[in-house]
Length: 215
Image (tube, rainbow, N blue to C red; front, side, top):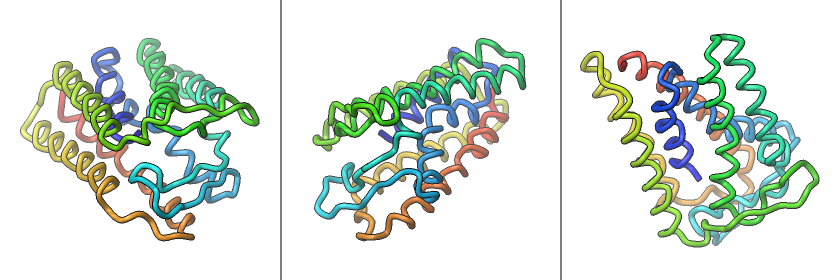
């Protein structure tokens, strides 16, 4: 799941209008934000396999601390508490907590049976990734719905609020397309993959900046 997580963040603006899009994007992406750092630290493991379908080039051997259901709930509670303490916005904090857990639920639809229920517990996953057209169709529908909800909940305050938003959406779609049609990462480049994934944090200040130009 990739643009489906963005869809959750965009769509949630309708229910949490006071929350910046930066926070709304961070929450559903939080598990993927943590994963590369845990991998670089040797806490979690994955390997690159050859001949896999576009969505199955990485084999997640162990990532219970970033991608188990229990830890997703824990991270959701922490982010909820942090945001409520910082802003006093109870409704927004509740939405952020739910968005964190939504990551695991959306991954559960697409992943093979590699998602732990808790660290050391059984793993599960419906395996939609086995069908590339099915995965693209589901994620695309989610993305369109999420963007539609965001556009219905906001409007541009200035010209940048429109141009920057659409440029950001195009960038996300292009990255998604590259992940599908682009070459797989070379074998043995697990550290490079983790380093590349960690740079994904750059989308958060961009989302925050765009949202400041909308109301």
